[in-house]
Length: 138
Image (cartoon, rainbow, N blue to C red; front, side):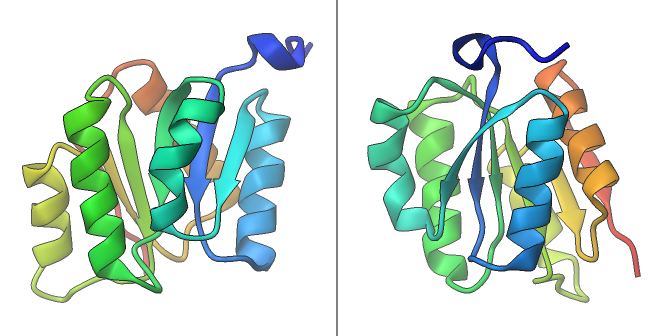
């Protein structure tokens, strides 16, 4: 049974519009999570004040990696209790993005392609307190 809307944990998803985002939203909601959605990183900090307190931030690094990293660092400073999950197609062969994610305190790094089941599993795991998760497929 899905809890009442106001009692559902909130996940903030920052991801460009499209079918992948729609699938992620549908899967997170089916798992009983409320989702707040932003197309780009610049809209998120304002949203944090208006949304239900998020229990996780899920962010795609593209199309504007610099903005995404700035948001991640800002959220880690202002809302350290909110775990950050990067789910991205921007995988660097030298591993720099994964190292940077660990350095700034991200709870998880997921490389695309990422199934909806994997995303939901990782989000649930970080909500329960797991950290340092890395899932890179393909």
